[in-house]
Image (cartoon, rainbow, N blue to C red; front, side, top):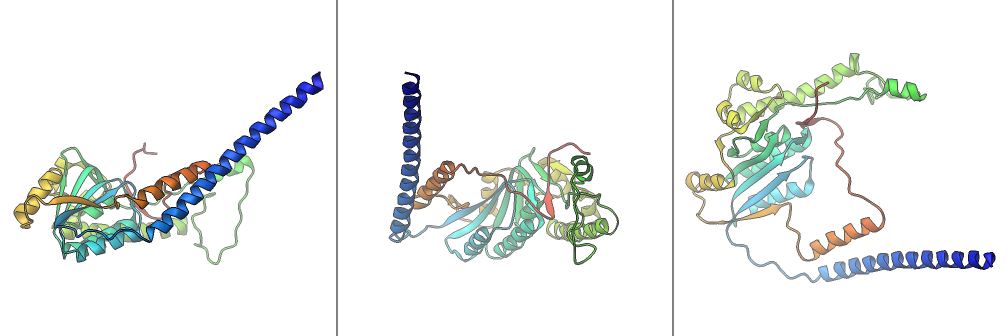
Length: 314
């Protein structure tokens, strides 16, 4: 009797495992089929209808990094005759110095072709502020956070931790500053001087463009370039931004000062709106990642950053 019960339980478990694995394979097969159909139908996508005159909205949200697709979108806006002005909607603590520079340079070229205005929502600091100054005018809420003019390089010295757990690192390098500072030792001497020079070079350029774009002398700019953040109200008083307001005030300014036609639609062009096959593709990608146990993780920033971070001072 006992042997019979054991045999039955094993059979039940085997049947359950079989049904579970068969269900997973069916899901994966469905996803593969759906992707194939999406790709096939995408070849026969309908042509886009002519676009009427409008104001484009370019959203800069979250951590800033270089982005070839975003750069191409900005370049396309300059050539699009239906775009009569561009609003840069910013809500970002900053990001990499290269990402901020890329946006600054690209928006400078766009500014030469179209009226541009920045609207800072909750936060426009560091590389995000670098982005804002590339436009013709900057708006922010009275209590928005702006500024944080500066550059940051962080180093973690895990030497004591590695020593405690018995890990010893060694390396062969082509030069004394290659891959320095190492994370098992403090940042000092020649490695520290090298990193300091790197930070200072980026910082001096940041100060120069703030002084140029905001019409401030360098001494006044340096007084504000100690990494501090300020409210929108203080930003207006100190010359970091132009006016208190949001998108409605920005549109009113475009109409009054740049002769942009009244009542134009405002259309978000970046991030590109997902619709049709793009939306289906995003859904299927999410389902596939979930089925395989993959999760979307945060962006890791390596290298030099211009980023305002919330945290306690050490």
